[in-house]
Length: 168
Image (cartoon, rainbow, N blue to C red; front, side, top):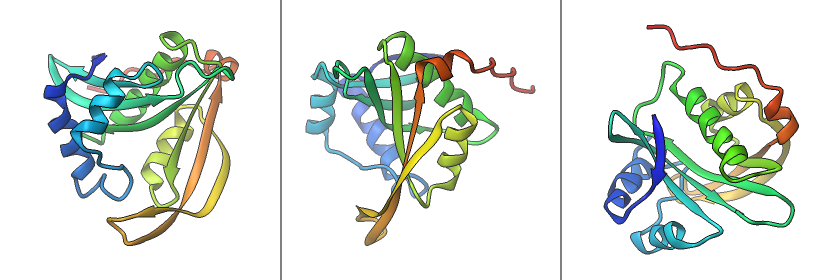
């Protein structure tokens, strides 16, 4: 498993995940122009998660270089979910935020209705920092949802125990 920069050939894969019925209420689907911007802008990092040489997920980092030392894990998705894959993915992305991006703090948000993501974030060591009520309009749902704000500081990440190896 590894992370690499997203290329224009990856944009269809990223969009296909954002458009899936299980992700569409929670992930914004952006056009190729916006994805190209993220892939080239120094304050963003659009990455592909590879397993066995094939795209298995993606993530979008934002706020890279912010003077506060925070970075935002703005968007993420896996092609195959279940079996604890999400926890390993989020922990690997968090490691990347602290190790490769030099973050002091990594933060992310989740829809108040995305209980699966909230559970994974908390199991990965993130702390719920706040809730923005009736805050985010979701076109797929046709209504606003709450936004849950999560964060983890470098010293909290350093204190995390290693993940147990998944059962065969």
